[in-house]
Length: 91
Image (tube, rainbow, N blue to C red; front, side, top):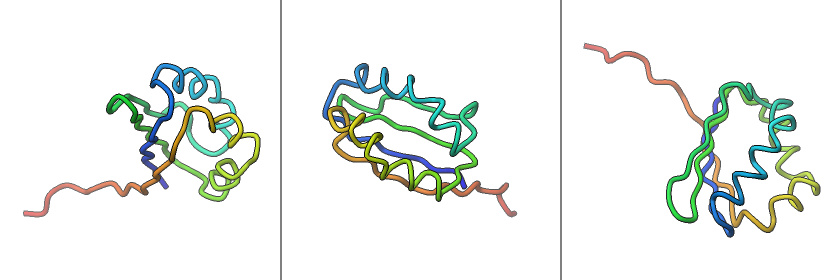
């Protein structure tokens, strides 16, 4: 499954991105990290798109006390969405 996450930030995007970028090894255990997309969508919002996500592993990571401690200063809320590819138009 592909997942898009809206990340509501407490900190600046730059400060959050520094910890995000440093956590790629952990993400690689639950998704295809080579395809991960990340960007700033506003002053206090980041967007993350993950591909080929193991949802069980993602759930375990998001509830892990170590992950929560690492992000608590930077993240107000993670809002995840599942993505489904759209086929070509039928006509």
